[in-house]
Length: 270
Image 1 (tube, helix red, strand yellow):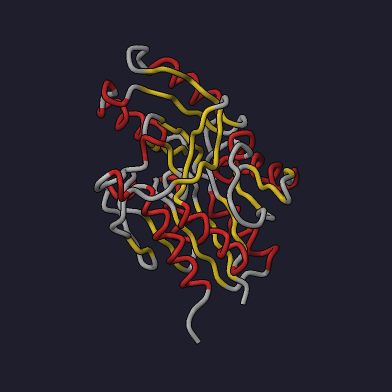
Image 2 (cartoon, helix red, strand yellow):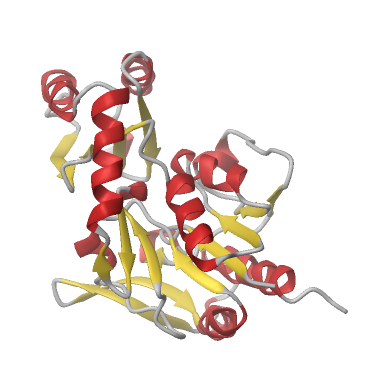
């Protein structure tokens, strides 16, 4: 049986220093492995135990990193274990095959976006018009597919986020608040569609998934079994669904537990 594992990365398998959520005495903290460097500084980590589990998973299943990151941002990450044959970037807008962009897949995605939702230019203009410079640090566009803001979270008005979500919903877009970033993403741009395509190509009999944010919900629903950690946007909303397991673990240790669950499901007893 071929098992496909599609997992979100940030705050699911890998963690910034601010997201580690280490508890207990410092002397008992898990050993960490840096898996991403940005501008010559360490940026993202997993535990050494998680690194071992991920290596085992790469031998037991088709592991597919599945991220909202751009291709450039994804390529900064150096995960332990066999190099993934497939990776899903830009929330499903790009499918990498042996590290190279599948241009036919990208063309099919952009055609669907043009037909089904408001254009990126309209969303960008709205963000630039309504986001207050007092709490907005950066305006960004990712892969000409979606937009996001980097904000000062403690100054961000909750009501503004709610109003943006309603405005976006009416135009076929989704809003997701993750840490210091607010994403505006077209609804047809999904990780689940890309996962199904990889499952088709690999002949997968079973799909497993994990993620922590609203942008992962479609992926978790599409998989045969899925998990979410005890932190993040989905946990804050107490979100769950049939086939989705809500784990209590938070922070980097949640990444370990997700990998343990993947391995158990990929290698059932008997």
